[in-house]
Length: 242
Image (cartoon, rainbow, N blue to C red):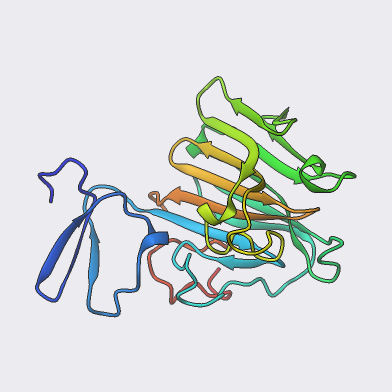
């Protein structure tokens, strides 16, 4: 496998061994103790999903194989660390809404850090309009994506962003949870942010709350926050450990 340019990992077990490329934990199935994945050349991509009244599927369990193990027990409004590391910080803002009047749901986020050259991306529902018109996005303090459809490309090439009708089913099978209707019901107003290096943030915009699908490549150094530690082990993604 190492002689192949695209080789990133091997999967082996039951006297078989296969080379893998484009390794993404969202597409992985449990090995059940039979198959093992060994990373060779490049860290895998991982996905964290934040939906509804603070339901979180971590990087190590993006398909919910370990259950909804990191649902926040504190349902109060406030800012919570989704990803906390020396190189990257992502905070989610949770607030009450007409749909979630007793339990706070996601209404915005902010991302910054050395990994993205200390640029800052902020999204928040500000109202008073309902739906996508009530949400705003800022890149380094400047408002972007002010119309639907809308596109933005930063001068430093760190960000490509759009506000458009996007099918949530193409992002994650839980992306529609509570605010996106039935699976297969079509595209909805959404933000899509692609940041270097290998960070993608999809936001499904509801009336006054949002669902997030966050994808990034595992990086060196420790990681904490409600999206988990991304060590490829589901068993330690507990509220006590986060």
